[in-house]
Amino acid sequence: MFKIITITITTLITLTLSALAGPEGTFTVRGTNPGGQGEYSGTVSVRQTGQTYSVIWNVGGVKYTGTGLGAENSRGYSTMGPASSSDSSIAISYISDGTFGLAYYVEQDDGTWRGIWTYGGADKIGTEVWTRR
Image (tube, rainbow, N blue to C red):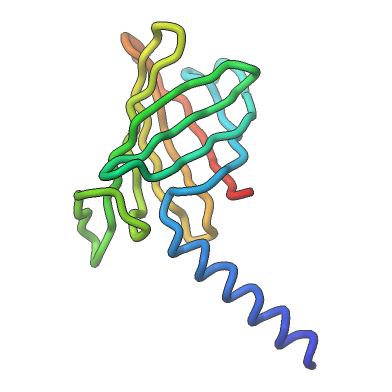
């Protein structure tokens, strides 16, 4: 009985801390390229830098650098403002080797972040799931 209570409390604390973290942290990334043109994996690091977020992906040895704007979802409405630990979505512009793009992620109930992305001039989207490390 004590073991079950301990596991339950530990799980609740972990989920609570994860929910309070906003998008900051280091994540494992799994994604699909636009138009379903293959899958990939890597890492992404998000940290608050003043009122914005610095976002750095490493996928297949390629570095993508981005700047993100957060928003908090409260009672069904998104409130945009300075970066905050209560942000539950993040929009990111990124660049790598002269290629630019846009991505948008929303925190899920299980603590993962799910999103879509595209690059300049594209007419299709890719998908990503971030899992906190």
